[in-house]
Image 1 (cartoon, helix red, strand yellow):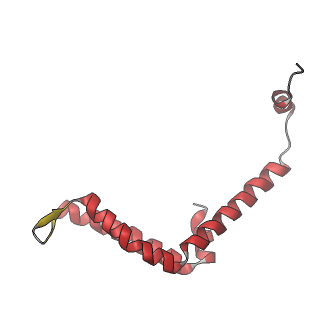
Image 2 (spheres, rainbow, N blue to C red):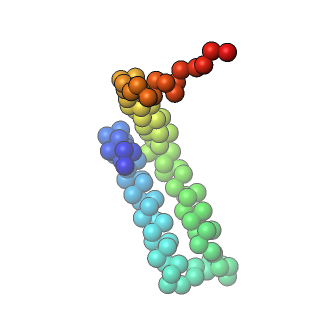
Length: 103
């Protein structure tokens, strides 16, 4: 949920590539319910079709800048989590659990 607004800010082309990727998988799913895909006399199973769609989409994601967007999202997420942890106040019961007993 947090990922899509960040992707649209950082790379609208990547958001379009993701939409096309999800659409391709949905179309493969719908077509597989109707009939089997046969290429050169060989029947392609649904996992093979989805693997082929994934392999075709990798260059598209690379051109859209998916690597930079992933690291941008990871950095933003770590910043938000770190800020939350730094400013969170511990209650009395939490402090007792954190203290170590002397040996």
